[in-house]
Image 1 (tube, rainbow, N blue to C red):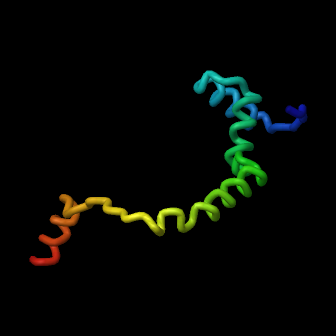
Image 2 (image 1 turned 180 degrees about the vertical axis):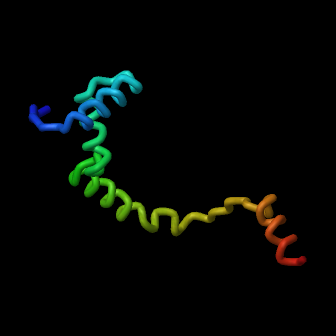
Image 3 (image 1 turned 90 degrees about the vertical axis):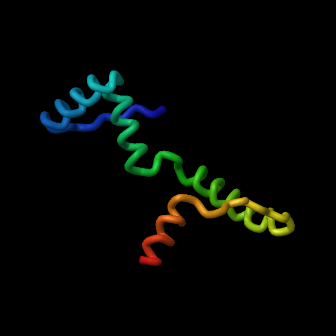
Length: 85
């Protein structure tokens, strides 16, 4: 972890403190969560690894006989009724 200092407006600091109290978390942890949410949280290395895994998975089931066994459900019956009105 790397230490950093930031300047917040009084209203910003008050709002952060209020939210931190409501969540039962320290202000610093709340700031880290907000920063992670804004920048994606995972980082570029994790994103690249995820994309590589997705690319490598394409076609792995192409030789498998798949039967998902999905028949008509309530939604499709409802849509059929609407179409036939």
